[in-house]
Image (tube, rainbow, N blue to C red):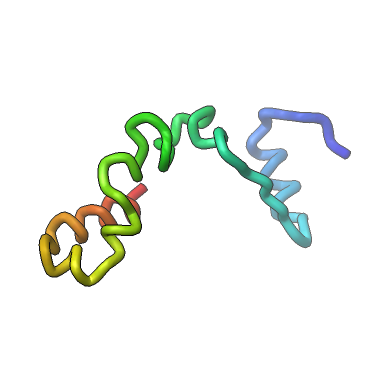
Length: 76
């Protein structure tokens, strides 16, 4: 097992030689990394309810809001 390192080139070399990769991530990773969360304070899902945006009724009522909701997520 390798010791932790901040050497990006060494990481790329090891990654390129790897046969498989496993990524374990969980709640809180986004906050620590400076990535906007989904449910936290000011999160992506606190402004609009994702379950309500994913309906035909929402699109028919205000297509611009629904398009913006999904567009914001595609460009993250």
